Length: 140
Image (cartoon, rainbow, N blue to C red):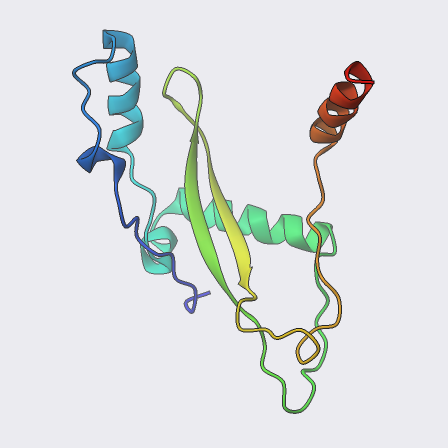
């Protein structure tokens, strides 16, 4: 796991946002969520138990869903890289709900017909499908 890197935020919102026009409750909430910083590198995340647990949960979920299978790499082909993305999820009161680590593939160097012949379509959540069907029904 030491090969994974998370990239820093290029334009932090704190440089462009002033709290002076917010109500006190909103200012308190923003202060709470601004005080917590997500790891920028794998080394930072790996030094914390909570982030190691989040990465392990992600790997367990990928294994449980049979997201991939290990196969030999064909001759002349390169493996697609991947990296970790770290995000802290908050409750409405500003308390930490959980820490989420995502392992994402870096498919941008692939070329159609050379590295792949099919496209991947992400799966929609059932709530999204229900909302879409409801809107369709309501609009005839």
